[in-house]
Structures are given as C-alpha cells and as structure tokens.
Image (cartoon, rainbow, N blue to C red):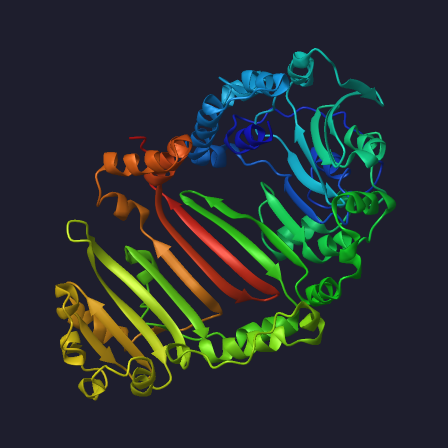
Length: 544
C-alpha cells in the first residue's frame, strides 16, 4: 500500500485540499510548511535518524510532466501483483484488494488521496510511515476485510483511532488511521504499547521536526524541493545502534541489536569519524519543463572538504559540450597519487585503528601511479560490428615514463613528438584486431590518448590538447538514451527487458522511450560532497 500511495503521490490527479484531524501539540512550526505538513511532521522526532517526506506535493504542471513515467510505475506494480501468490489468508486478501487498482483512479477508489502529503521516518530505528488519505472510511473497510480474512480480528481502538497489529517477538507490524492519515509501523513487540500510542496519534514527541530547522535547511542550504526531501543522520543512527537515546529508542535497539555494539571500539571510532560527515540529504532539485534534477549531498566538515578538493584533477580530453553531444561519456577528475595518500591517511586515523581497515603498505600498481584524470567519449556506435567511434584520454604527469612503467612492451619512440598522431600499429605491430589496427594515438605534455573509428586521427589530436577546467568534479558521466534506442529495433529492446525481468517491463519500457538524455556528476561543493543527476525527457512522451 505504501508503494502504491507513493506512486499516486507523484502521479496523482489535481490536489483536492481537505483538513486533517490528526492532532498536533500547539507550537510554532518551521517557516514554509503548510498546515497539513506541520501536523504530520509534529509526529516526527526532531532527532529522527532518517526521514523522507513529501511536505510540498508537486504542482499540477509537474504532475502532467511526470505522469507517463509514474503511470508506468504503477503498471509495473500491477504486473508484480498479478504474478504474486500468497498462502496466508490475510496476504491473499491484501492482494485481492490491491489488484485492479494500480492506476491513479484505482488508488483514489481505495480511499487514498491523490497527490498527498506523506512522510517516512524513524522513532529510534523503528520505521513509521504516514500518508494523507482521501476517504479514511473506505480505507478502514479495506483493512478490516484483510484483517478478518483468517477468521480473527486484530482491530482495537486507541484514543478513538482504529488500530490493527500483527506479528510478535522481534517484529510486529501496526496500521492505524489517525484522523485522515494512514499510519504504518514496524517495531519489536516489547515496545508495543509505547509505539502504538505514537502510531495512533495519542502521543507525540516533545521536540518535533515541525518545529526544527530541518525544512529550512533542506530548502535554503541544499535547494531541495519539498516534493520528496530525504535525510539520513548517520551519526545519530550509529549512536542509537550503540544504545543511546530515549528509553523507547533504547528499548527498540536492545531488541534488534546485540549490546556488544555499545562496547565495540571500532563502532566508537566510526562514530567519532562521523562527526566530520554526519548527514546525507537527497531529493529533487528541479522539475522544470523537460528537465529533472535530483541530488544527494553528504555533509562534510571544512577539513574533509578541503582534503577532497586536494585530490581534484583536470578532466583530460573532455571538450566543452561533450557530455551533452556524445552518445556516452565518462570522466574522472581524480589525482591518483593524492587519492591513495588521502585514503591511507584516513584508514590510519587513530579513531579507526580498532577497525583494522588500514591495509599493509604496498606499492600501487604501475598503471595507477601518476594518473591525473581520465575520460572515455563514445561519439557513435555501429551495432552491426559492435564497434564505436570515440577516444580514451588519460592525464599523466609524464606520459613517456608512465608508458615505460605501465606498458613496457610499447614502442614509445613513436610518440616522441608532442601532439603528433601515430597509428596504434606503430606502438605495437602485433595488434591483430582490425579496429585497433586502424586506431590512432598521441601524447601531450601531460596527456595520452587513443582514438578509434571515423575521424580518429583528428579526434586523438584534440583529446591531448583539451582539458575541461575542473571546478570540483571527481566524476562525470552522460548517456544519450534516445540516441541508443535509435540504434536498435524496438522489439529487440523490449525482448531484452522482458527476458531480464518481466514484472518490470512496463516501467523499463516507459523509461527507455520517455528519457532523452541523462547526466550525472560527483563533485565537491561548499559544505560537502554532491552526487547530481539531470534527466532530460523527450519533447513528447510516445508509448510505442
């Protein structure tokens, strides 16, 4: 039900606002939150170890843009439901309720709200989900039917709210309807009564996310859209796993984790290390026209940020516009010597000595020494030959010395002149592959490059004379999805998808035919490390 609700959250109809009756202690809420979001986040502890929330549902325009992909997501879930089997009466009843409802209209018919507010979070390490409903009575009727399928009922009322529980021992599941909110939770049975008070809305944390700076930080500092903001507090999660927290949080940990972790020196050292890298943030940054941007940010201390900036190297052979124009491209902007030294320094840190992570001091392989960035660009592909046109470029401190160490059999004298392309056969006359025999190589003052295919001689010359100025990128990559799909018959692609996983055919099919281009980058930014992905959709979605 959670997967379906999240599908409708991103692919639903127009939002029909209605008040929720879920209680919230009277308090000032974070600036920018609407009433519904504030009421929902009032149940989330301010120091939750993880949270993922839709506190600002997508606009009607954004939903129209994403609808084909999201409808396909629901279609994929429908295929999985159709293929699923269940022997337990309650599981079979759940499948019966969901089957035939995996589209926007069907989920609304079940009582879920189109385009709802929602949140996933932890009370301690125990997961809780809250989803805004459209018709609580209809949802309750469905849950009651599932509950009574085995001839027994787990229905009870807490503070006037219907609640159901299943399981025992180390894992118990609970479902409640708190006003106009569906609540799901998993926890150890020893904390049942305390957890149920929170699940049913009878209790709320003294200090909640609604009154914290969480939303302002996500929007202001990390520029995340409120449609799906995520945060994982790594430092807090490990502290909880080691037995810290409130009595309820400690009881959850005690049931699920061995108490040896609290006495483990390695865990204590990792916790100390996480002071410099405490949190991960993730979510969409832009849903604008055909462009979708999503990011993951790892918060880092200024010291660690500076250390990472110290390993950044140029992006050799990557011309301006290459990521957008190439059929596929990938580049690394990393100084291998500086990176190896940094990793060794981190693993030798006193806080991590108890973990035994530091490897024995061994020399790096010859091909890894002296590398300062690399790129591979594919401009064209020939399916009938399984060959491509493109270039591989390496940044190296001393190209000829690097070849002597890494590839001693190569005739380096052929590369005596900077910038002059030579046939690969001049470097190695024993090459047997026809494609390699037609390839070209060249060196710059601090670069090496090899190019194959049409225009290889011109391409290799440019590869050793161009390097993008690097503003903190450790890695970049791109793929022209539209271009690749034009190279292969559609039915062949569909057959490959169906052969790998039939239940995902609808989703993968929609992605293949809806996406035009994808770019990704890993870069050092002010305050941390950022993984950024940009997806460009085709001008018109075409379901073939």
